[in-house]
Image (cartoon, rainbow, N blue to C red; front, side, top):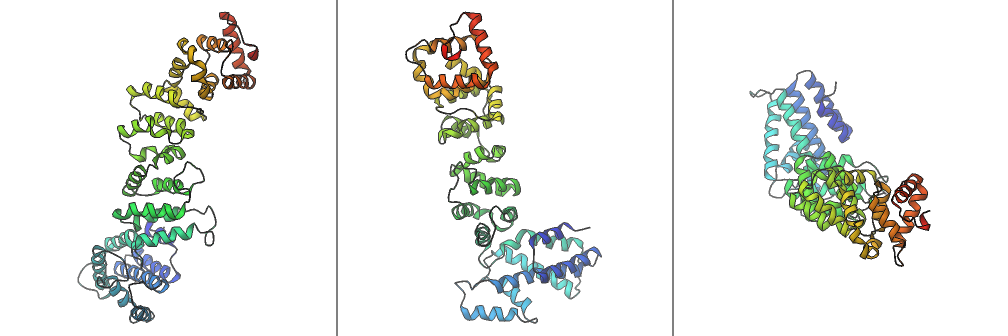
Length: 416
């Protein structure tokens, strides 16, 4: 049976040398040889960092002579471990961009390594090895020549470069590294750098846009600190509604206040009018609009929506359950509306057609439609849509004719 940390090392795909050392550690751990287990894990840790140094380009601030000397010492079995440790704890002219707290933790584990190697008096139990593994999971990605943030950005850049990575390759493994690699204070800069690097479209309302896809995966895979920072970042940049539109199930991660929600449906929802109904439906479906404000919100949407209609079943159900149809009927088919019918209806022909298609006819609805055709000036746009509805849905046409005949309304020729 594999240890959970063993699964983590498999996912990381370390070199053969590192993997062999970890395997030795796991074998010792399972056989209660905890000193040996911790020692082999510590050597795995330093071997990872040795390989990072050897593979890395010289940092700008480090002289070529010093860099060559470090690399030379890493080639020697007698000096490599001491050299890696000295560079990890060097705060004066560091090659590793890490903070002092992390350096102190590394010194602590070096002392525990010595307890194991020299069989000192301090006991080493299973929890010591497990704690070291937790330390590695939390901090290994941050210990890089460039610094954790820069290193991870480089990985993302390579991932989205078709020279190295096939299009649409799974990026989840890099998303999961954000928690480990990026300090909370660096997250805001990280989002900006990442978006600028990987997505020319930014946070447009596009299903092929990469940035929203990454944000969606962060909400699915990262810890609360990372998710909360991303939500704040999206709101500050006005990117949040793109997520709500493309991934409506993530709306509750955005942490909207009641004032935020009111601003969304009154003003922000219109920044991209084609997405307005879907976003409004998502707000309703998640009960984010207070009950006492729903009627006002329905009326506001109806009076401001032009040239668009609710087009998906989930949105329609959310609207219907929250009285949208009743509000639309009251506004559009009130007898007082007749005087300005043409002016009001023309830009809302699609929305009126949606109502006719999705809701049962009322007497007033049929009467006003029949009356509309008797005017010299009426909405041909709406007329065309009603004809199409009746052609595609004969039952709707029959329903209309029955009400008109029963009430003595004259059925327009176009609708016979």
